[in-house]
Amino acid sequence: MIAFDGIFYRITDPEFEMTIPAWDGYEPDTADEADATITFRDGSRRYATFMTMDVVRRNMDKNVRTGECLGGGYFWCSDLIIIRDAGFDSMAAAIRDLISSGDIEGACGLLAPDDDDGKK
Image 1 (cartoon, rainbow, N blue to C red):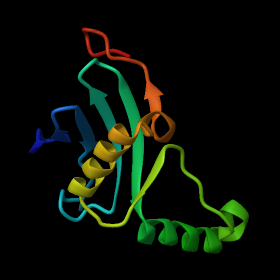
Image 2 (image 1 turned 90 degrees about the vertical axis):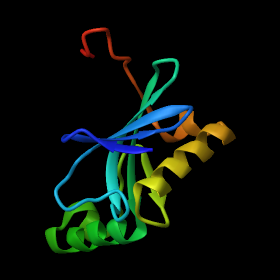
Image 3 (image 1 turned 180 degrees about the horizontal axis):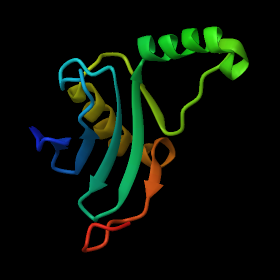
Image 4 (image 1 turned 45 degrees about the horizontal axis):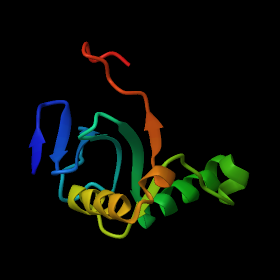
């Protein structure tokens, strides 16, 4: 289930809730990149950046022009998960698969838990 609270999209799954900031021009069905915080039922949290190959390519092409990353010779982003298809459903499906395969710990960085006041 995808809900919108005016600031964040919240994707609710039986095993996790994924929170994605609402960026201008990004909609749940067409978002080709997103930063997400994944909160599990035990309160632990992980971070992921999702991108399609087109977004990676655009970043590398930009770096050719700007000279960054050896003039577009490479691209990196921490906690990157590349998805084939755009949309929050594809992102949530990737997280479900990473959980079931046990690869979530290697793919997504661990964040400090929220305390009761919402502070980190």
